[in-house]
Length: 231
Image (cartoon, rainbow, N blue to C red; front, side, top):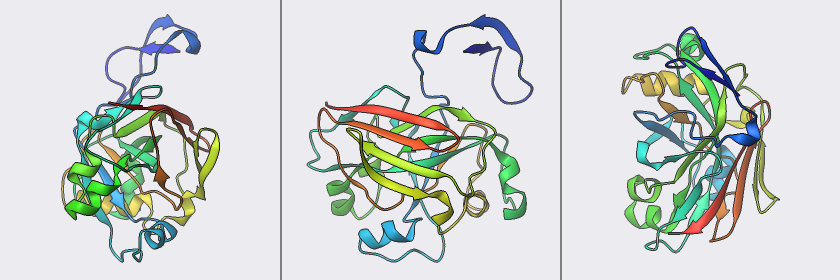
């Protein structure tokens, strides 16, 4: 691990300090001003939720206080009886984006991470909107790092719970690809450097309980792992 001087956006300079990966704790690689997430962006997931894939992107927000890093604990709120994992590819914005064309959209991306859009499913259903069920502290693990050389078009995404595969799909199955998402979102709100887009989850979502270990692996990026604990 080589320490950089200052902010990671722009030209990188290094302090000269270096550590072995095993000797450091990885924090979330970014603390965004906002996390914009996509709903039902894989047709099979929409189907398992009893819906059809939307013709236009459906977006919602997760608070920055929900963000945690690799190795941090997902904390189950006592007010929920059903909390689900949702493994996802996350895109990190690298420069201000407003009214971006899809053709140029990927040039606004700094890099990509694995993510977990943790959801209190019972509260999502009860509220008929996503804010409470998606917004608890620790409900947005991101990591283990930002990969700046990555093609989001066709990468394998695998989610495991206690080493058992629960989700296994390709990002090529997205209904709306990353470029389309950025164009759509930036027509609504300005995306700032460090903002994170959760690009949707494939089929296979399911519950997690105290003591579980959830891993989201994305080919070409790495594996994000978090233990589940009762709060």
